[in-house]
Length: 130
Image (cartoon, rainbow, N blue to C red):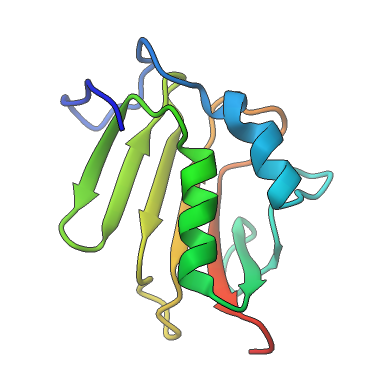
């Protein structure tokens, strides 16, 4: 996906690649956002926890993460659990294949920096009708 990375836990702007903001138009075309900057419906937990229903949650989560992280400057595996993508503007897209929630749904977390009104949020991808 990209080069670079390394370093501590601080989220700082990096050179090259896309900003999360560069990917928002494509992301919102496929996954509409509310006027408050959230994707999907309110989920269980805190205000920033959201749900997107799908017939195939794993595939939909991978598609969402792929659109959000397009042009990332680094991609770091989470020991068999998923990937963390760092964007040029310091935004971070984390894709975990299985969440620690009871339902074990796939989850994508956005830590947005200046991303056209999109809020930082955690999105669970759940099976339709559950």
